[in-house]
Length: 243
Image (cartoon, rainbow, N blue to C red; front, side, top):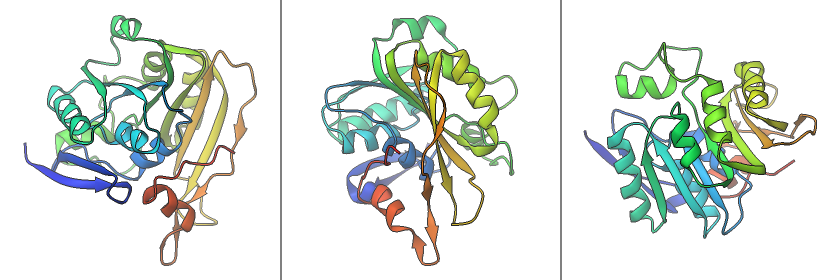
């Protein structure tokens, strides 16, 4: 497997990742920016790939205890190596998110998050390793499986965060509810002002009885590139405002 050496967050994160497989993108950084973690808390990422999301989170919030799960052994090893290269203490476990026994063995977590492979439109990338990370094949884990795995070790009132295509809002809300998480915060990401959102962050709390709400959201692009608000997140490691 051929790798490239890249950086995220204006050089704060060094990332070795496959050239032809799963590569970190906009969703990775946006997801990490939206996790309301505090130093000393325990966080869980499911489907961590080469570790980009938890590394971006660790760059913004020092002192986290990190557990990450990845089903591909090569990617799990790469995530562990990337964590070490960035001076981040992370336990990377090779496992499948459909493994209920694994979920029960995980320690209690304050926050759990994932970027599942559920892009429903467009052409599936021709490289199998990349296609399986963006377009879930037949028989793959469902959104309900992802939500259930993340919620199992989650402490009461802990947050469960998913970044997903906006067209999956109904099924994602149902999956979160079935996993015992509610009080969902919806953060829409608009490609440009006045355009429909293509992606969203959904963040619910374990055991919450509160209503769902829509946060202000984020416009990503202006005529001359990323908007100042988007640049603050993507380059300067700013947090996504709670809203």
